[in-house]
Image 1 (tube, rainbow, N blue to C red):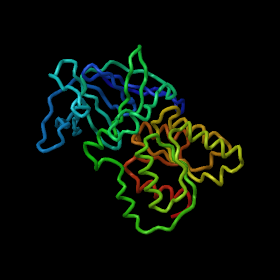
Image 2: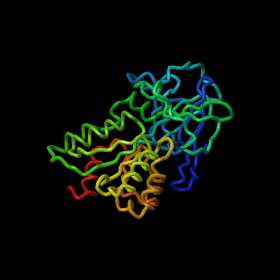
Image 3: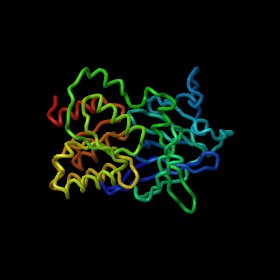
Image 4: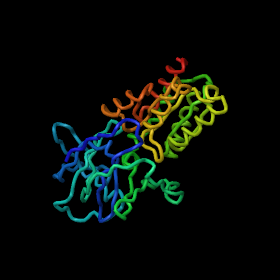
Length: 301
């Protein structure tokens, strides 16, 4: 089963692939999915994380297989004919997730996604980024980046890259960040402050970022308060592509440099960002490149 995103740019829509593990229903953004295939045997690797089943090599690409049931601490059960491998690509990694069945794809708006309340989202161990209701059942959208980073921390945000930039002057260009993950928002903010950018405005999603931009615009202080925008793509209420479209079609905002900083930067998503007018696009592990890109766009090289 192959996937293909047919969504128009900047419509604030996404497609969710629904799958099951032990009778529970979960989802993944189709933008992360390369292919879905029936489960096939994998080659075990010794002395790796217990959730890594092994590796296999379809079409000459080496892919790590993660047993999602094991990682979510759910019953693994016996392998059945319905077991599937969801092959993904994000953060420049090719990873397959072993699931128990795949049910289909749902097209939804980001406004339809319920953000988990503080009882879930404040937990460091939570891997739920959103919840949608489909046919009277709740489908939990999983944070696959966090799942992979928990298994292999070196695949996450490379904050050590900031140290290699050396000693830098304090820079007072205000930067607005749209990022729904509290952990990533803090890591990005801390990294930028360490790199000298000390005026950071944090927003929890595209909608909050857009409201803040409109507030500055209405007060006539937009260009004083925002010199650069950094946005994730996947966010509840309003995604980064919709935010980019709104900014780049606004006469007063369109000249503000906007960087898409996301785990989803692949060929197709890059083309979407270019069409929407993003000034640059970077994959999330590249925090050092993010700082260098901000320097370039703001003339601080």
